[in-house]
Length: 477
Image (cartoon, rainbow, N blue to C red):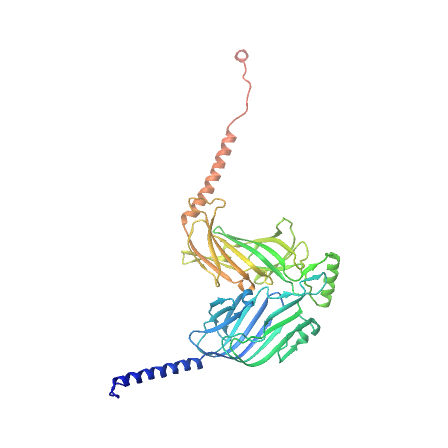
């Protein structure tokens, strides 16, 4: 530029103008290349106590920074699980970008260009019973609140929302907010909102549906799982549960006769009732020594059925569970070490167990998992496929010694646990060979000490005899 103009000041001015023009062009290009939601199909499944959402979104012009997905408040407070993948591809990494009073923003690390994403989210305690209390035998109605629009930081060209309900007919829906176009499908079993076109970024329209939902609102308020690993051929698992019916609370008295009659009528009519009287757990296929009790010691009803790929255990509390009622129970089982423990390259042991609770239809407010490793374990590494809070502890049991430091205990904690969290996690570690020898030595020494004591007792004569006079002894001779 300076060679074209004789005046240096004029050259500097032209250079500055050129830079401004180029910068404006780059900004304009980046604005034009921002992601656009070309088509969004959103499905809200509210047929159970846990609300599940599936979003299929066709996105144009995804940049290198990925795709931002927003979970608005107050739904973000109930978010338990999020998963993303390409519709016909592999799973994509999802990271939390921002969390504040307006909600949570996640970044989905997707390929650049035009992609079709499938995003799944799960929410707990998102349905509000209305009325909050009902009498025994009444149906349970709940309220679902969300948005007609797909809340996104990008504009959306076309979108639809389908809300799946538990109603068998139109009379089962008390009311819902209508944003035309909206239609009822499957005799009131679903509501379809949309399609809506040209929706601006971060646009929202409050949606409220009041409908029948007699699904069992079974919730574990607190769960403790303890996994004790032994290199002598066994892994012992014991799980403690605090169960609560979090649906509409029961008002008035309870009649077992009325309950049996109402339950029979509902079964004959093919309908469900808000109360439930049993839960089903899926245990590992190698589980043995299964037991189930409540915390006051009563052995309640249970049934175990072996199936391909697992063991089904149906447990029945001492009384049916109605709204607001609680109960505590625990169960346990054993599995062979070979079913969960393996040796890697002859050096490291690898423990692989499922993280979540075995009751698939029940969500959990707070889960604590304790993994008790053998004495002498060290160089411990943990791989959990989602975020958890982790702490360490020590435990002394049976023949453990302070010389070896006791058994390492790895403690995981997580809130809002659902069925999707019941996936394997891995703990790898090394073991000092001397640790197992010390245990054997202690056992051998203990048995040897017992034998010595028994031999001593059997060989010592502790009876008392009267001394005989020497004179009488002499006469006999």
